[in-house]
Image 1 (cartoon, rainbow, N blue to C red):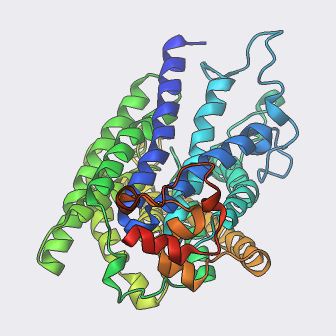
Image 2 (cartoon, helix red, strand yellow):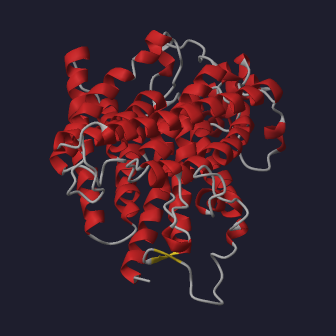
Length: 452
């Protein structure tokens, strides 16, 4: 065990966990004022449900002994982290770090992947239905896909027992372009289609972001945490981490400029929302490629992602699906761009040692990257659609039109983010334990008091 490597991975895990509250601010600022708490709650709900499932069986399903030809780890092999905690003998290691540190690092990846999906269904999803969806989707989609991409275990005699994409096919995805971003983006697209459009989608100016400082703060926290996301995936305090770190700086810088340029040429002005979104698009694109391309190519990739994603977010209006906070346009599109770009610009001298088309490697790596990207997309989209459809037909996934008009914070959570009226009137205050808050039959009356 190397204590320096262990310290870096533990710090990186904490940075990645911080990304989910950062995402809550980023998403929350982009919603209406009467939906910000629900939006943030979906991120915090993801932390809770995924954290529990990861410890119970998720880690084992993703990184346990393979039981399906690279498709799934044995969910019972390390049930409840048994074996990982066995201190009666030498502590199990992953590389130079304790396996427990690796468990924690991978847990926060699972958490933020689920949280990312929530931005596509802002202002209209039942919180209980979201929590059920999160639990089922992470179990049947994320855990297997994490095994496909991230598991590089070997058995007796060096036999490969890891995932079919990363270890088997040789797809390069250093930190989660497929397992995280394409995975979440595909599920987001499926839920958009299941839940339908918000009332007034594309017409109501009330759907504009209500708090841009929240958005900028969230983007900053995401970028800060992303250094742990990418550089931490080196699983050590070493040169590979440094390589990934500098690319995690380069790509989003260029992507921000690309997005702002599109806004300036298309709309006549560059916006703070564009700057925040451009940075995130660059971070998404560089995630799989941060140890595969040089910093100069990272900037090219970032610029490309900023431009393409800026144009892609408008497709929802043309195609008629309501991706509320542009999860599809940024995470799905950006993840695909970054994954495929590796097939073009992977430098054989970089840590990932890929041989891209621009370096004389032909189309072989590009083909593998395409298989990785689109197999994850199809698997996640189909399963997410089925799960969402079943939930919608049984417990219902969407709130009522009346609750949507009153505001999802009041009608679902009996709270308001900006409850100034109650302090003036003195007749309503959203404290825990207040029996009045259990009377969900009168959301309109509660809303009227807040409005007053």
